[in-house]
Every structure is written in structure tokens, then in C-alpha cells.
Length: 192
Image (tube, rainbow, N blue to C red; front, side, top):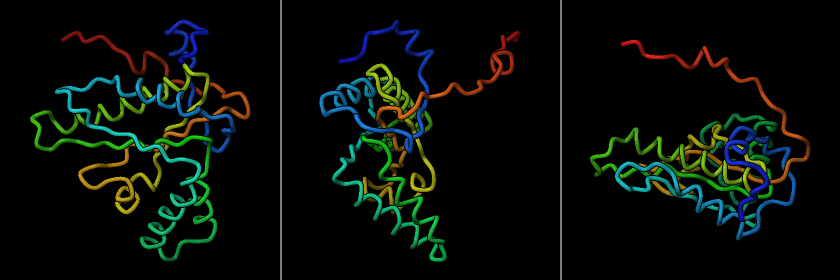
């Protein structure tokens, strides 16, 4: 169940993205991950379309995902250097848990595509918050693989798109705060 060690606002204020390459075991067990995904699905969703879905990639399928990613990359960039390929192979194997979040829009709906895509992003954010509230660290990555049709096709088909790879685990070191933009640079009052 969710960790109630702090207030909800404190949880929101202390959530940090962790670097997947720095995550270690333990990751969430099946029940914990299931609870996190239930929270992630409680996201704003104009029209009740649920224009997103989650694919859990188990540790026993990470090698296969690495193969899908590197094969797609080599097909697109046959001149790829060894270090590029090694980095892509390692991408799939980061952190104890991996959830691929897909934006699954419903083009036939009158709900604008942009709103459906925003809902998929909100589902990713809810998953990050649920992981933090459960005592884990999470990182939402995109990178080349998220924009590859061949990688996407391993999980679904157009018009779906990969919204992100969400890695979840325990931090191997404290997650540092990063600089945030000054509020005055991002918040204003409309004087219309």
C-alpha cells in the first residue's frame, strides 16, 4: 500500500526523478506495482477515453527489449558505433522495474488529440508520484527508442506512440535536488 509517512503535499514537494542507471533492487513487487498502476490510471481524461496504456516489461524480457531496440537502431543507422549500440543495450536493462507508457489516442473521438496526449503525460506523472509515495524512486525517459516506429511496434501500432519508459527502483544514492526555475519567470497574473 502507499507509504503514508508524510503529508500529500510534502510527498509532492519532495518527489525527484531518479536516474534509472543509478537504481538498484529492491523494486516494487507485483502487488506494489499493481497499486501504482491503479493510481496512474486516476488521471484527468476528458471524455473518459483512457487514451493511454501501460506495458510492464519483466526482468525476464529485458534482453528481448534490448534486442528490439538495437535491431531497430541498426536498421535506421547502419553505421552506428559500438558505444552507441552498447548504450542502447544497457537502456532496457536499467532499474529493477520498467513500465512502457503508450499514448493510445482514439482518433474517432471528438476529444482533441492534444488533450488525449496530455492525458497520457498525466498518467506518466501519476505513476512517478505513486512510485515516490510507495517509497521508490522513478525516472521517466524517452530518448531515441521512444520515437522509433519499430520499437513502438513491439508494443502496439500507430496511432499509438511511446509516451515514455518509466523505470522504478530504489536509489543507490540520495537523489539530489535540481535547480528549479524562479517562480516569477513561470507564474504571472493576467491583467486582461
